[in-house]
Image 1 (tube, rainbow, N blue to C red):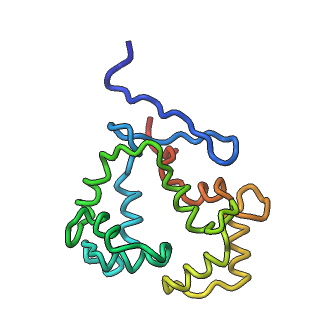
Image 2 (image 1 turned 135 degrees about the vertical axis):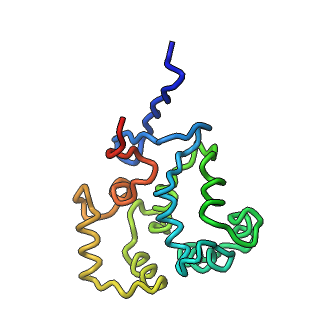
Length: 176
């Protein structure tokens, strides 16, 4: 009989290559959302450091990646509130039941709008400019490509992207 205190090991799933990547699961079977991972995303949206996000804050940042995001979608993200705090957001997400959702793959689609299977560096340049991070020169783009191209095929595919954005993968620093 299995020890009731032990959590079941996540089942590996396949990514675009043949390497299985286990997904960490919460107690409801959904994707495990860790506070420190969510905090990185939160800080991206909370540019003023107020500790609260409004519809305008969210829309301003999301429209860089999703040009046609609607007010209805933003309202849904805010759980029909005027504003949301980090604690509110974490409470909403920690017990999710998302089983067939791959957040890294979904994020990758933003960088691959033409569905080529690879990051479009022109899109990356546009994002940097739109977010006021400055312009990326061709030399800068080459450095990004060389750094992110783990399999050294000259392009940034989904597997390479996963290496840069390891959300949802086991933390090798965690104690067992």
